[in-house]
Length: 274
Image (cartoon, rainbow, N blue to C red; front, top):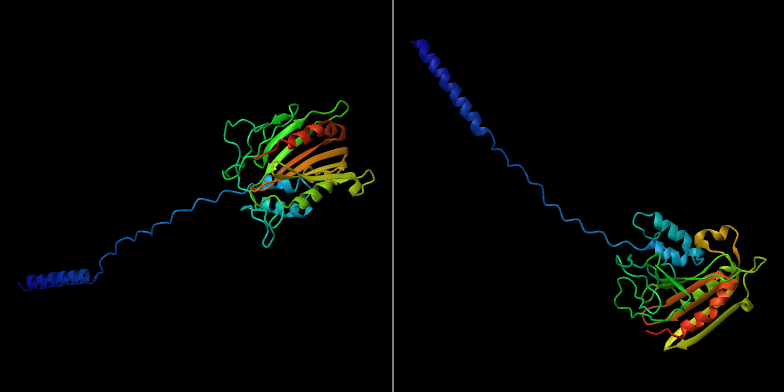
């Protein structure tokens, strides 16, 4: 009898011990739900660094060449810290954008409007019939034309039309001097003032500055500045100042070819209007 009482007492003691331990045990904490993750902002549209390089570096802007190369290697496409805007204090990198799929080439008599900038009034003109309209090879080119070569020349000429928007593209004088600096004389000297024909006039209320320069031509963008320049080349160019920013017409080719298109170029400028 006593043994059964002892067993009963021990069993009750174990029960009280287990119940006591259960009471001391802390209730399980619910699993924490991680805080909601903020939506990732969409990346800002990239700058058309290639297009800007085409206009500034291709036109012999040695000061902008190194900075542009650095920008193209940078994941963000930004200029080096502290670098001033390329092409003058008011120049900014134009946003990327091209012609919509299936859009016809911009050619003679068609309004030219920068991609994404609907506030720009189109510039209109009548290109010579002999100029062959081509699809612009970059968003920075608003139009481009092949100028058929003269009989004894081995290459065609080309006329390119640029427009970057209001306040962009650099000052007239800066662009004229850069273009002239791409030409040298036969002995490698800078082309003097006597070899440069420059004129400023007004056409349909727009200020037009034209440039006619010839000599040995070196194109920095195509590596010609470190190789042999093209001899006996010529440039016919014009800058049209508008309230929406300047328009640039830049034609380059063999001297005889460009001379054969000079009259058509001047007549085309007489038709320019907004």
